[in-house]
Length: 535
Image (cartoon, rainbow, N blue to C red; front, side, top):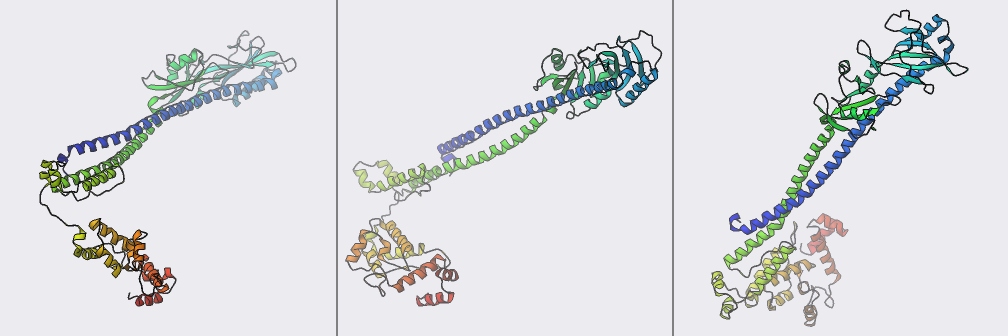
């Protein structure tokens, strides 16, 4: 069928296909977008939660580090209180030297009396010179209810962050402070150990004190040049005393890089731990997921599109075939033909109605024109070469040639196709039958007889089973079955055995070994029986 011949059909086909594809793709796109947004939010929250847990864990490590160092000082003061504040200078220096060897993070240790006057000191890097009698501890903020105090962070001459850790020396009996033990603690080694934790490929960690001064960084050069990080939104939130949140903040860092940052305060200290990670790297799992989802979505859309096209073509193809058959009838004027019914849906019912219309209009059109019930112009458009075929009842000489044709057509399938024949009684009935359904009725009768026959001979009962003709045939003395050895019109046991064996062989598609197995007899006995039947 040419496309230009049926523009209306092409419009229907195009609209059906477009509608099917649209109704398939739009839900997929909607579901895919909804799934992507939900997964994106989940992954964002998960990534931010992981970084927040890291920051919180690092803050806890720093807090534990300071507490452990304070505990090591407290243990020394508890076991050596009288010696530390006593008059034995040598014994005091031995205790301080031992403590300095044990604690690698301590740079210097000083002992002071209850008035904060230094009475003994030791330094890892510098030589201790005689001090004035009024020389006091540099950090004197320890309160009576606190176990230790931490000074503000300061920087050494070589740029290393340090702080003073101070504990009280208590009298074993009165539990009152009789002196103080203060250690200058190096922060760089501890901070470097923590900030070296990898945050992806480009993420980093840094620490600030209570003033927002940078005291630690994954890249320590930032600390050496005292980079100003107070303008970072996370640092501003920390200095403002805001509570930390797992929901990070997106902003541009001093290097001009878009990052996602969050912070966690260090317990018992006024420091903050900050994590910054480039947004592109932090959300890399989201980008990978979006690419995979896009690939899956494209494949699904392609499959759904193909399915939609297939169903669209399946829907429009019967219309196309119906159009072709209608045009064929119009061109040939063959109003007695039928359009093949290929489905049971609306198109099939339309074909059935059209066939009924053709049957209803299968009458003498010329007479209809004269009576004014048929358009004359349409009649002459349809009127070409007229062949008048008389009904079968008027040409009975064609009955048996047609019977032979349909017996060949409806032979049983299989390698051994049986050739059926009609009993004399059946032949007589067919020759005298009026065939109101014409040739089509004859074809249906032969097909029914081949299907219902118990043997290779078709009897009247096979053509008209369970009908009013059966009783009429009995009343007229016409045998319904094979008469060899029959009793009162019923088959004998020999006939039943013969028909059963032949039917079993037919079921086995002519395979005699399989038929013998189904019958429960030997192949030799089966061959003997078939010889008796002339097979």
